[in-house]
Amino acid sequence: MTKALGIYRRDICAEFAPGILWITGESGGHPIALASKSGNLGAEDFFAHVFNVLEAP
Image (tube, rainbow, N blue to C red; front, side, top):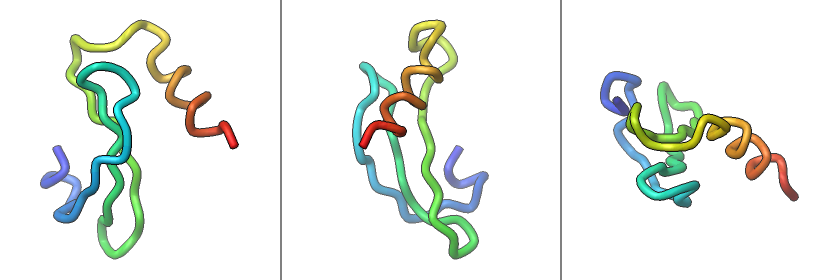
């Protein structure tokens, strides 16, 4: 996935849930953050949970 997006340098920052990672890196010289998850992992409210975590101070 990251190679297809042109992200060649990446750092794993946190694990939101088992097997679901927060990754930062660069794409085209710009910073980018991704949540990496398999299609069958995570609860139905996964993305709501991620937004709440990222918005917390």
